[in-house]
Length: 299
Image (cartoon, rainbow, N blue to C red; front, top):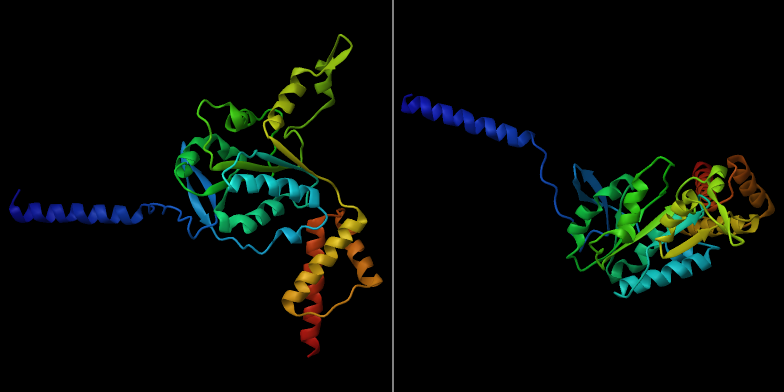
């Protein structure tokens, strides 16, 4: 091969490699926790990476109306964690739309200035938690690992991995990581009448069967249980008034509470078959938007 031919060949190789590099995905950038308040764990193969999220800290603890006991419990636990003191993994369970996820995000808003950060993770990705831990073990921040809407089916074996994650692994979890999970199920698994067939009487005491014991064992690994209950009509209307006040102040709308407005809010909830915080917020947005649109059309 002549020198000219060899040079051309090498140039073609270089050009080919450059095209290959351009087609390859770029290396993900490390999350800068000085400027990033929340990230999401993205599973990749046996591991994964953290992807920064843009979050709005526009929901505060004062926006959660009628759940004072729940706020007090979780806020105290979070304050201990942020201060570097012992704290518990928490399970927020109960009726949907009652403020479970909103409370976790409000805690981020309250304590971000004290070093609290949030990492969202899907249930299926809990299997790769050891890889996530390696990303944050040496970080000086305090991380809430947030798993929203956590639940398992009867034949879902992933819940056994969660038990190991909580307290069953040989390697201890780092002190700067705490798990907050929300669920509509108290024991995270469906409960059936057939589960009671394994129960037995021993010396006059009822002992639950293995099926029940296994389901209770999972939720027992959360040191803190925070329960949320369906809203009463009064509770729902109080939340409606709160959000009408907040949104009207934000958009400069003058309004007043009336019997007609109350009935409109109740009909909204009745049409959706739900009377909860999410429903109240959606009604307030719809009503304020409609009122503002009417004002703009009238001018």
